[in-house]
Structure formats: C-alpha cells, structure tokens
Length: 354
Ligand SMILES: *Cc1c(COP(=O)(O)O)cnc(C)c1O
Image (tube, rainbow, N blue to C red; front, side, top):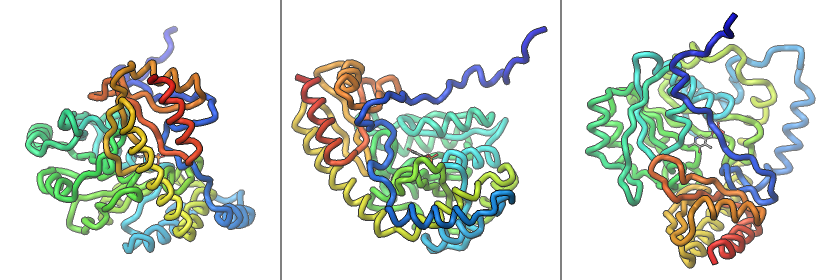
C-alpha cells in the first residue's frame, strides 16, 4: 500500500521559514521590543477570568469588530478579524482567488502574499520593482494587471522587507488600473506618515489589512483584521471556519484598543530609534534604505551578507538574512529594538565589518 500523496500543485510551494535561534538580541521578525502596557494585562486577565469556557465564543466577534470599527470611524460591517492578518489574507484568497484565478505581487515584497495565494490554489503573477530604490514602475504594473487580470493585487506599504512607503498617488494609480480587488497590507502603517484607510469607499474594491503583531506589542496573540466594503466582508464569512476567533483573542484585541496612547508612545520610541539606527548605519560600509516601518533593510558593501549574519549570531544578535530572497542579493533586515538592543547590534556589526 502506498501512502496517500499530497496535492500535486503543492510540489511547487516551499514552506515558510524564519530561523529561530535562541540568542539574547532577536531583531529578525519585526516584533515590538516592548511588552504591552501593564494596564492592558490586568484588564485582559480580569475579563478572561469571567469567560464561560464551556461555551463557544461569539462567532461574529461583534464586540471586537465594533471596537475596531470605532477606532477607524467605520461601521462594524466593514471589519473582518482573524488569527493574524495572515488568516485574513488567506480568507481573501479563498473568497476571491482560488483555481483559475490569479493574484499580482511586486517583488521584493512580503513573501506570504504569494505563499498564501499558492496554498489556496491561486495563480501568482510576479511584477518587479525598480532595481535600486524598490519603487513601483507604474508602466510595468499596468502591463502585469492587463496581462494577468488578477483577482487580487497586493500592495504592502510600508513595504516589507524594503521599508518603502508607497506614495498615495501610486496606490491611487494601482487602484485605477486594477481589474479586481486591491489589498493594501498595512502591517506597519502606524510607523508611516499616511494610511490607505483614507481612500476606502463602499464603491471602491479596496481592502486595507492591519495586525496586532507589530505596533500593538501582541504578536503572541495572533490577531489581525481588515477594513473593506461590506460586500467584501460578507464574502469572507462564507469561507472562514466557524468560531475561528477564540474568546481570549477577542477580549485581548478589544481591550488593547483602550490603550492607544500607550501604543502611540511605543510607536514614537521605535520611530526615534529607527532614525538613530539609520544615521548610525550610514556611518558604516553598508547601503541602508530609508524606512517608514519598524525595521531597516541594509546591504554590507565589504563583507558577504551570510558571513555578516553568522558573525552577528556569534555575537548574540539575530537579524533576518534576506540575501536569497527575490531581488535582495546581499541584503539583511534588522528590526528596530530597544536602545540597548540597537546598541548591541551596532557594536556587533562594527566588529563583523572591521
Ligand atoms: C508581520 C507582517 C504581517 C503580520 O502577520 P500576522 O499574521 O498578523 O502576524 C502581515 N503583513 C506583513 C507585510 C508583515 O510584515
């Protein structure tokens, strides 16, 4: 008897990996370096203690969605939440992608957009960004959209792993040219000067996704959401598993929104450190790209990137090795940490480059 084989089309799909190395300074997955506010922890645990655990949670996560909606000045029927924005992106691909349909991505960008598309059986049309500064070439974008007629066009702003903030005119131009949904992934929007949420309108096929993993210091929770016209949200309810959001996540995410002042202070501290880190890197033999997010992409000019990565790990600092990613030969990405973590990184980097 032969063991059942997996789906044929999965043969082309690689798993998603990020190295987990247990060193003291971990600056590789863009988490917040700060724990959530103590007041959040107390309020969350208090509400958690009162959960009737033998009962299913609210299937529509009504209270959480209402709180998110209020934060963004929309109605709750414009909000869909899931286990991380990755689950939200998967629901979009299940409802609007699937066999016979295509999504468009522009490399280099967040690897999960094409990965999630493929595991949902959706085709992927890959466009390329400008070589040097990673901006979008709108003629090239127009060509891909015309040829592939994607059901979903993904943009990420600020882009991961480049840090580039897409100008508003560019998002508007893509929105005008795209034949299907435009999904703007705003995992890092709070670190940036503008948000595509301003462009949302019920007649526009625009979706904006957000996460609690970065700004809200709650990566352990797995909670993300989107804002979109109600007809998009309706379609997602059709493909998501019943009770996909557990009671604990619903409470945690709703309570977190009461602590926006503390969250904004954390964002400000990270942005301040980002600028300091950028200036420091500019003193070293590395190319560093400007970032509107909580990380920096850089390319050592004198030492091979993998050797730099290894040299940093040997000095207890973990960054992301992007050197094998599309269009990113020789590049590494460092998450902005606390002052002390950033100093440890800079000190180690200087030694490795010396
Ligand atoms: C980190 C990140 C996410 C977050 O995913 P979650 O599933 O919410 O943790 C989404 N999009 C981008 C571009 C990211 O970098």
